[in-house]
Length: 66
Image (cartoon, rainbow, N blue to C red; front, side, top):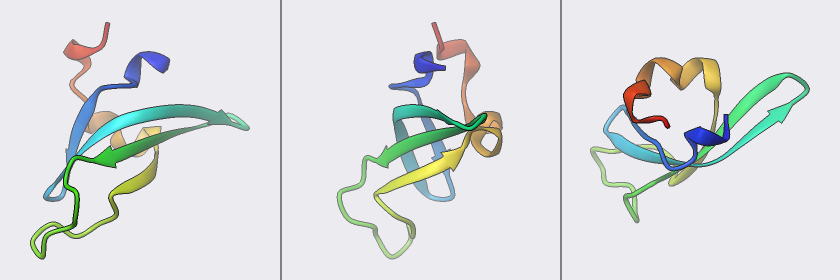
């Protein structure tokens, strides 16, 4: 799962890059940061966020993962 660090994905109108992956009691959490310094009015959401892997897995480009 550490191979996900550095990968990016799009969610709503925001682009996120994965900065950490943690396995907490069998639940894989993905921590990501948006490359947008401040949320624009058309791009709501936090700059840093945690996601469940299962929720964002369809958004990842698996061909970019080593």
